[in-house]
Amino acid sequence: MVWQNFQQGLVVTGVGMGLVFLTLLLVMAMIWLLDRVFKATPEEAAPAVVPPPPAAFAAPAAPVVPTQVDDGADLVAAIAVVIALQGAVAADEPVYEDIDGETVTVTMIDPGPGTWKAHGRAQAVK
Image (tube, rainbow, N blue to C red; front, side):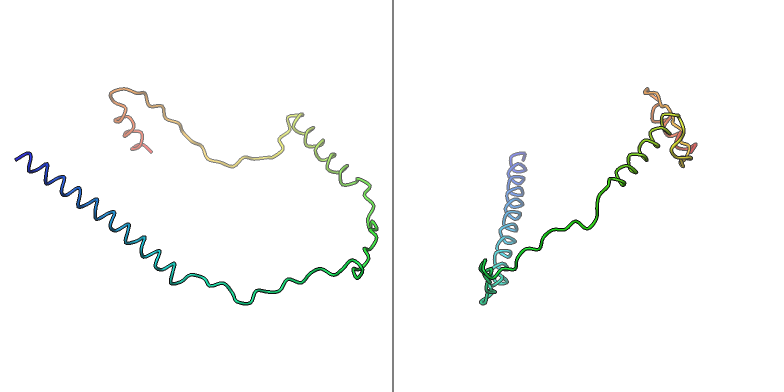
């Protein structure tokens, strides 16, 4: 009786695994077939590449003329802002006024035989 159950279990396992692999092979064949049917065809007329003009016909490069003189005023302003913020932090002045949030109560649950009971009570109190 035990041997028959074992044999039946092996047959059911083999059939199940065989069906799984057969299904995977079927899906693989469908993907391969759909890839062959709907494969992108290369275009017959590729756009022609136009070579660059010879150097004799190239336009001369325009000289680079600076349009604005950089006197460093932006850098000085940025450094002044950083120094002012650093002074505010050093003087224990808050950089921002309020912190918005909510009050959270932390419950301590000691491990022991009544841990789950205490946890249930803490959840019921909330």
